Image 1 (tube, rainbow over the protein chains, first blue to last red):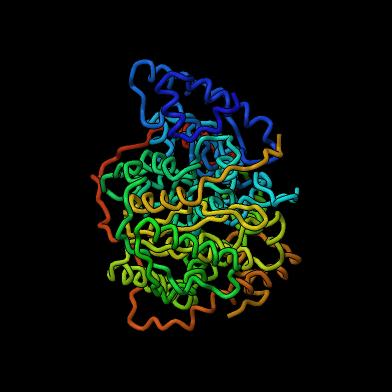
Image 2 (spheres, chains in turn cyan, red):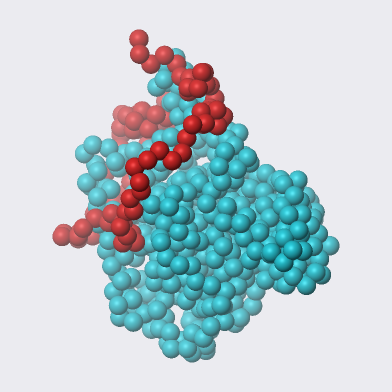
Length: 493
Length: 95
């Protein structure tokens, strides 16, 4: 039944409704596909029994005519979402065998819509990274390879397990999180669609926090339409997250295929950074042509503070991380290393439990918040953040409906290539994605073509607050013009 | 700005992360690389600019001031490395 795993969610929904196959058969097909895909290291844990139980319940609901919008659709969930009764670690050793006695709001929404849970997906430790190499479970391998090469490539990160699993057809769709690009960059590296919605669109309750003013949940899917279906189910107001927006959630799927005629699309000149690969620059131009051909008007705009978004991000995010990760103290949950006194217990537990990148980030965050440095770093970065947001507000006020930009500065790189002595080299991966986390805006990454080496490349569309529906309409135009991408060779079988 | 090794040790202690002498040297290099990267912000004129406090303007909601959850210490303690009589257990804190 391997062909069942090649269906989009929209096609699977159709097949289930018509009785061509059952949710149990669909789930079994995915479980059978996951088993031989161990070399990808996309899943950190699978729950086949739970999946089959949920699928049987879906079949019962379909039979009764009570199917939900995602009834019987098998999904993978990034390991930083709490799933009740299932080990949840955010890719960190420090959480040990943490088993949440509660369910995150977003996953709860997915199960209520009828989705089936396959397992937890790999990620950079605490979502800190752009390659999924910093996971305590080891790196995830990108299902894509360069033409004629067997060198293992990263799937991007931090939601690299989610993106790899979607691209490899070992889940129908996945939930990820995005703090600085962690959904959009891996989507671009794996030929999948990923959307980071507006800050507040999805509840953060039950998602292990990295940087609370930037973190957002969102889907990774095989098509723009599938991403729309998933986001609609994930989004919505939640009284348990005080930053969750109390706004109705539109029917995003209805906007896929909507006309974009007359839309004004901004091309920010500051994104044409020094050293941009000619391939990415050409892709960007091609994307502008695709939108123009669909009747949109493409104009150059200026977002003058763009170059400061990444340094400001690394202050704000790391400061918030140092505070959020203070809770891992070896007392309430997770691993404990004994000490002579409580301070030594904390220090030894945290030294043993956190990986290198997380330790670095906590220490920088602690430093920029420490007495005497707060104004110079944190306050300054929050002022720069105001300016970054103002840049976008000015562009929107001048009649721009959305912004088109590359998703990443390059295609997927090799495992180990950017994990050398200078951590900043990895941070530069986020140069095109981080601005909208700083401004709270929604952004979608859509595959737009292949590199000369045969690797997927993605374009990013950035929208106004709570205008995700416009991004789905524009994203659909790119998807139709560029065609959906499929991994050419399942080499892991 | 850059940090010396004494600052690395102080920040590690403030972060409650034990570091060995060997680690201090290379942490110093890594932290300074990151700090050099963020120093670029110094060139932005932020005179009269308000620091951001809420990225999407919204009124913080209030809830009724009532107890609406709890009363299950065994669930709260289920993931604790050590617990006793409904409490988290830690090494002696007060002499």
